[in-house]
Each structure stands twice: as C-alpha cells, then as structure tokens.
Image (cartoon, rainbow, N blue to C red; front, side, top):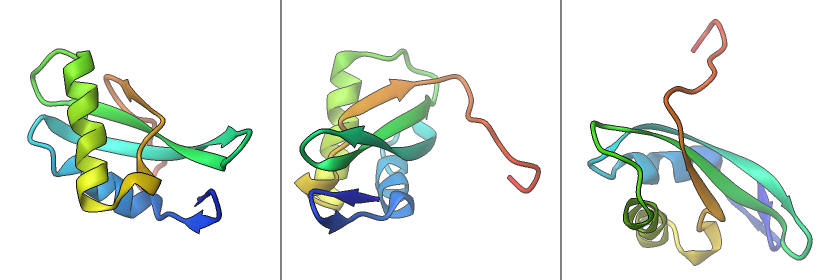
Length: 88
C-alpha cells in the first residue's frame, strides 16, 4: 500500500502487530484517504481478552515502535475471525 507517498508492506505491519501478546492474528488492508491516498486499517483477533480503547492504543503503539508513525493504523477493528482462502 502507499501512504503519503511511502510504500508500506501490509505483511510487515501485520507481523509487527502480531508481536503484541494479546494478538492471535491480524490482517491489514488499505483504506482510501483524501489526503494520504491510503491508510492502513487493522483487523485483529484477540487472545482471551476483551476489546478496549486501551488495547487499541497499545496495538497502534506496537506498529509505531516497530515500523514508524507512517505505518500507524488509522483504525483497529477487533474481530472473531478473518476470512480465508482455500490456501489459507
């Protein structure tokens, strides 16, 4: 995806977010943005904890720490599962 002229790897961002101890799995997709072109949005499956604003902030901080502010997710959605293809 391209955020404000910077190429961002969704896989790299997914890996950074997955390092959080309460994250089982995540998927990052681009969302159109009027100024930046695209911004990352994360869909996250949690490990035995309830979603909260604090947890969303921690996950965003995780991305900031490992990749930088340019890759900061615009939004984190907590989901029960992620759609899969036949190959996973």
